[in-house]
Structures are given as C-alpha cells and as structure tokens.
Image (cartoon, rainbow, N blue to C red; front, side, top):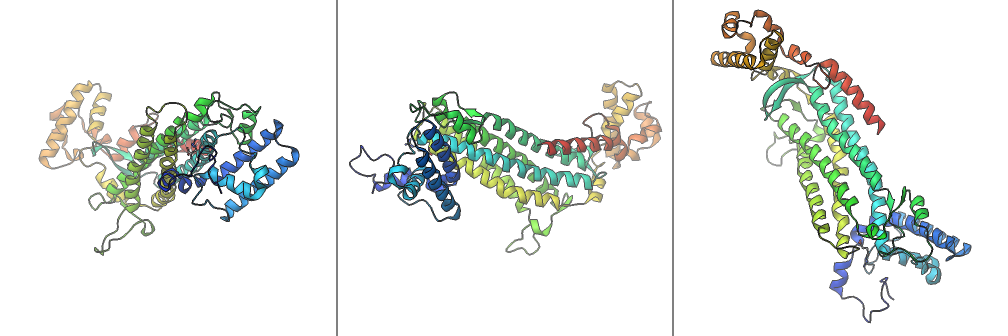
Length: 461
Ligand code: ARG
C-alpha cells in the first residue's frame, strides 16, 4: 500500500536511502497535536465551503478526536514508512475514518502551509513556557536580593575592583536583562500571531476556504497577507532562535560569575549540595556543573541560531525542502533551556552568600578613590584636579601598604589643602554606597525601590 502523499505520478517507490534522508518524524512528531488541531479547523472551513456534508464533518471531527487521543496515549505512533508528521497523521485518519472520508481532508491545503502554521503554534506555546522558566530564575534572583538587603561587594569593571555596590543591586542587574528577554518574547509573539494556513503550496487556495476562520480557531490574530510569504518565511523561527540565544547568553553571564564567586580565591558563595557535583577521583571536589552547563549550552544556542540563518540565507521563494531543517535547531534550543531553568533557579535560590568575605573585600583595591574625588568636587575643587589628588592618595597609601582611610590628616593635607579630616566621612563602604542615591544607583533606598518596580514588572508579564 502506498504510504506517501504523492505517489500517483511515480512508477516506483523511493529508494531506501532517499526515504532515510527525507524522513522527519523523529523530530516533527511533537507537532502532531497542532497538526490535528489544524486539521479540525480545516475540516470546518471545508464544510463551510460546501466540500464536506454535516455528517462528513461530524465523522471527520470524531475520527480526528480519536486520533488525537491515540497520539496522546502513545497508541498511535509514526511508522517507519511515514515521511513526516503530516503523512503519519493522514494514515491515522484514514485508518479511523476510512479512505473515502479520510481522503477528503487534504483538499485545499499543502504540507507547506501546514508545517509553517504548526511550527508557529508550537513556538507560541514554547514562548510561554520559556517566559515562565525565565521568570522563575528572576524570582530566585529577587529572593536572594531580598534576603541580603545590606550585603556589599566590590563592584568590578575589567574584573578589577571598581566601586563598592550592594549585592542586591548586582543580582537585580541580571534580573533586568532576563526581563528584557521575556519582553522580547512578547514582541516576537505579536509578529508570530499570523497563520499561514490557507496559503496552500504557495499561491493560496481555489476552493473557497476561509484562512481567517482557521486562524481564529487556531488562536492566531489573523491569517497572513501573502501566501508566498506564509509558506516561505522563517524569520519567525530565526527571531525566536535569537531571543532564546540571547537568553542563553544572559544565563551564561550569571553562570560565569557564580563559577568565579565559588572559587576558593573569591569565596563569595557556597553551593547547595543538591545543585553541585563531585569528582570521580578527587574526594574533596564540589563542582559548579549547573553553571558550567548553562555556560556551555549558551554556545549551543548561538550555534542553533547561526545554523538556521545559514539555512535561510539566499534561499529562493517559496517553499524549498531546505526548510525542513528549520525545526531541529529551534526545538533543541527550547529543550536545552527547559532543562536549564529549574536547575539555575534552584542553584541561585539555594546559594549561601559569605557576606563577611564580600564586605571585607569591598573597600580593597582602593574602591573608595572615586568617593574622595567626588567629595573634593562637592567642596569646590574641579574634577580634573580632584581626580589627580585622589590618585595621589592611592599612590601614597599603596606605597605605605595601607588603606585610604589609614592615611594621616597630614598626608591628606599635603596632597591637597582641601582634603580636611572630614573627607573620612566618605571613606567607608556604607557611606560610599549610600551616596549613590540618584535613580538607578546602588544606594539602599534606591535599590529597594528598584526591587519593588522590578517585581511589579515581572508580575505584569
Ligand atoms: N516535512 C516538511 C517540512 O518540515 C513539510 C513537507 C513539505 N514537503 C514538500 N515536499 N513540499 O518542511
């Protein structure tokens, strides 16, 4: 029995290697529930166009529901001879509705408009799961920020000690990046909300079908405006792959910091046993594998994006079989993120921060030098001069092997006459942090407001 959807003009079946190359059920089977939903919507517009009687429509919908149940239970699966998810499901439909009725559904549609629609449907659902997983990571960051409202650490630029900041401020910086990823998914969703169903192979349908009715039934805002674009475009997939790659990169930046913070040299954090791994040879080891896998998988997500873009580059309109290569990279990116989210969220939520260690390092490396310069500016000294004077304070302190706060009154005065003993009021980490009190700064009051606004935004998604 013929199992392909296209046997009529062929005298022989496909060569074994041809079929092996062509088959996609091992990855497109996850589109099956969407394919059946599309088939039901298509059956209804066929009926409205007078191409299925009421009884036929009922029989068709009943058979599709039965097939959906068998797909869900695993009673129906693709056969080795099924080329793709669409072929397998047509076989399943015919087995349930008979060849006469089952053979009517394919009128007015093509696998080209089908697959473009189903892929969008799958991605629109995936986008919701990705957003929710991202928000779980944000929750963990927020919980740690709330748990440590006063903890400080040396903020860094070039990985060098720069200025002291609140730990909460630092953690929320990561949360903001992740919220933008969620926002990007929303923006993507608005563009992806058009249904290609009804585009047919490329030119549209001649059978009086209503693409907008199908679009509405499948949860889209509208049908695509152009049937060629509907079947040929995959920028919705590439854009999605970018958003999730960006998300992976943002997670990898968190991961990298955790790996560094977890070293003996930093000693900022201890990982919970449940989210760490050991070594098969070194009994003492406790490794940050969750963070390393996040860092590693971000490379894979970038590869999925660039691979897809390379597939699309210079492809003529409309559908080409190259497009079958669109799904695996994007499915993979989603699968990897869904593995990562609970692990990263769990790792972050259970971290122990060694706030004493972080506080001890916060002023080290003369991180308060900018405070000296800005104190001088507040006392009427031009910044260019103040910068020089504060730099000289660092040079003198470094030569003596002491901190800025350990310079004597005489040393300060000799460096610049305006450096009175009152400068000591900014030579504490707490004073420095409290002074950065403009919108977006690290002062505790500003960070508390920032946290409230961020939580409100996260709840609004
Ligand atoms: N399985 C194909 C894909 O994923 C859809 C089938 C289109 N095939 C065709 N010969 N027009 O893109």
